[in-house]
Length: 163
Image (cartoon, rainbow, N blue to C red; front, side):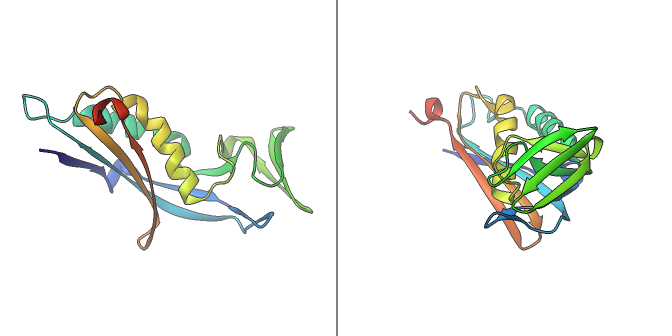
C-alpha cells in the first residue's frame, strides 16, 4: 500500500521574494510574492511504517528556501538577454532595456527564467539530495504557490523505487 506525506504550506516554508519573468523577449515589471512551498512524497513505508524521516525533509526544505528569502530572483542566463556583475551590481539586459540590482539583494539562479514553474523545478532539484535514497520513495512533488490561486508543481519519479 502506498502513502503520501505532505510537508510545508505554512511557517518556515513561506518566503517573500521579488522576480520579473521574461515574456516575448521583454522583462515584465519587477514584482513580489509571498511564495508557499509544499512537498509531497509518495511511496511504500518500511517495516516500521515510515516512508522517511520527516525531520530530514523539513531541514532540507528550510535550507533550500533560506537563500531565496527577501531576495530578487534572477536567472543566471536569461532566456532572452544577458546578466553579468559590474561594480557590485547585477546587470540584466533584455531587449533595449537593462536593469541594475545591488548584488547583495539578488539570488542568481541556474534557470532560464524566474517563472513559478522554473522556480518550482529549481527548488525540487535542490531538495532531492535530502530525500534521494529513501528505499520506498516512488515520487517527489514540490508545489510552489505564488498566490492562493496560482501554483506550479514540479515532480520527479524515482526510478529505483519504481522498478
